[in-house]
Length: 243
Image 1 (tube, rainbow, N blue to C red):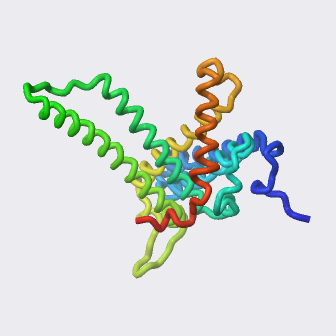
Image 2: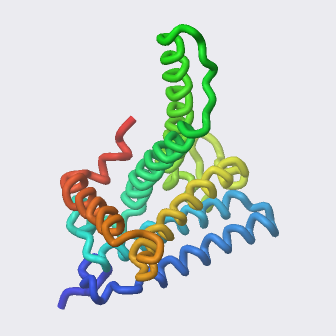
Image 3: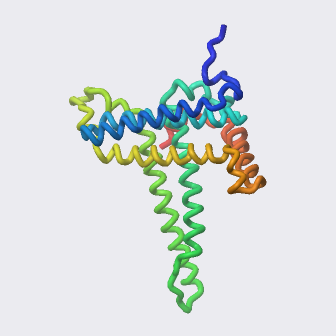
C-alpha cells in the first residue's frame, strides 16, 4: 500500500494542514529569536530561521494545493517536501516575484509624488526623468539581487550555523555565521511570511469586503496561469546553477 504523504494527498484532505505547518514555522522563528535575545547565538539562530523559512514554503505549497493550484504537477515537485535546496529555489522564485511587484508599486507611487527640476530644454527634462527612474529601479533591483544571492547560500549557511567543519581550517559556527548573516536572513524570512499571509487573505471569505469579485478572480486566475503555464517546464534544481 502506498504511503500517503503531502505530495499525494488530495486537495480536500490538505485543507487547513498549512495552518499546522505555519505554526511550526512560527515556533522555529520564535526559538531563533530567543537564541539571539538570551545567548546572542546568531549561528544557531540563523539555522533555525532558515528551517522556519523552509516550513513557510511548505505551508505555501499545501495552501495553494488545497485551493486547486497544480503545484504538485510541476517539474521537480517530488522534491518539494524532501529536498531543502529545491525549497530554497522556490523561495528565490517567490522573492523575485515579490521584488518585482514591490518595485512596480513603489514606482507608481513615486511618479505621483516626485519633483524633478524643470529646465527650458525638453530633451534634458526627459533625460533627468529617465535617469531618476532608472536610478530608482536599479536601486530596488540591486536589493532584490542581493536577497536572492543570499537565499542561494541558505543551505550552506544552515549547516554552517549548526556544525563544526574543516575545509583547510577549522570552521566554527559562531565565527562563520554572524549577526549580519542573521539580520539578512531575518529580512528575507519576514518578506516570505508576508507573502504567505497575503495568500491566506486572498483565499479568506472576507476578502470580498475589500476587493471586488472581478479583482479577486483576476488575481487568482493570474496565479493559475503562472503556476500551470509559466512554471510548467521550470526546473527548480537548475536555478541554483544560474550565475
